[in-house]
Image 1 (cartoon, rainbow, N blue to C red):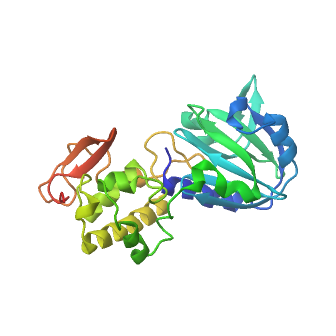
Image 2 (cartoon, rainbow, N blue to C red):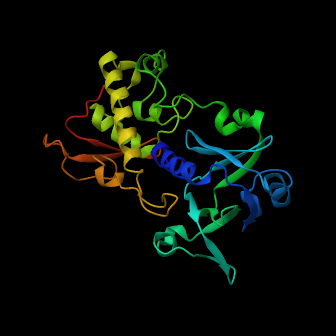
Image 3 (cartoon, rainbow, N blue to C red):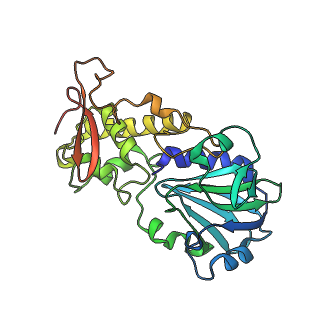
Length: 292
């Protein structure tokens, strides 16, 4: 699933392209992608000719603010990613009219939703597994959505002292805690591994045993890793692509995630190991990441 850096990359790129454009039409290949009463007909009616006012992110979710009293909420799920380009429906299949990755990369060819725009371009959702969903919701009820309602703070919008306060009376293993969206939003498997590698902490360390120095290290590592990942447009390990169809390249800078068996890049004599933690993989250096 795209994590904070990937979703932030998508939002920033779409923000440059979509603001002040209007929706003209909508096509979907599976009605259940639009998760609200009235289905496609209602969705079309509500967004037609409405101007896109802003594109923003909350955790791993994308929010399109449009004219009127409705907001479009998009959850890309496991394999979904939004694309911006031009497609033509040929024999029941959407074909990119723009040469390059939109046309050549197989991961960009699972088109499930196409929303026509007033400039002749389209906003599309490519989603191999069809888990992604788009919801039209009243403006004043966006924060009541179950995905958003109980989310923790944004990692890049919280101060170090505020971050420290989150750990008061908190219990559990540090990697699981960082990946809990109710604790802090947007950090998944990839970035939890990379943050803890940089912070010198073993993923199974108990948060009850962390001191102020450890929490400061985690905070700084979190800030540095997420900022760097956004700069490199996220990690394209599997399905994720940017709106132009290109890959991010932060996967080329990973130090821990999926580096099992490789020597630690700190040259400390450690080797990257992998364990299963609560059903998820956890990658760490056998030497410098200390268990507490």
